[in-house]
Length: 209
Image 1 (cartoon, helix red, strand yellow):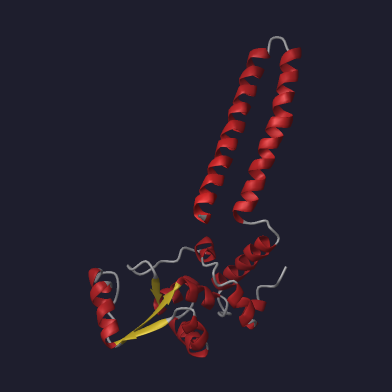
Image 2 (tube, rainbow, N blue to C red):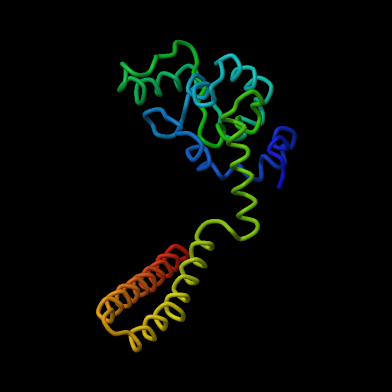
């Protein structure tokens, strides 16, 4: 397992995992601006539990990398348009910037998580991120794992549990009715798993198409 601190030093490694922005909400809910896409510098600071100045310093040191991952500073007409179309609809919740406003999409926030040293939340994001990436590379993540688990459970139910109930029913006396009910229940579970598996296969086929 790669130590999470390696992300602090390796831009190549950071770039390789920047698409996994879902990790942010798995560690802590990331509140977004009303556009549903961006956060401000203050919101980044709140998410990571650091000062606004700490985020500004990080932004200054890594501006080129963060800009490449979507960070943008609005000024002039762009800022006026954003204020009119987005922030003005929520005047009670969001301060109206006067001269400039830096916005971060999820990708840039994840980038910050891999650069921010003095934040427990950032450290947890890095650790979780590497866990997910390791699982993905070893084939233990996402639909592939769910698919294998479903198939394994279905196999066990069909090849082991149901035949065991059949054998017990043949030799049982007073508990036969209960065993039949349990066997039928397991059979229904097996059928639902098979139906679920077939539905996933159809959905995957549509997505690929």
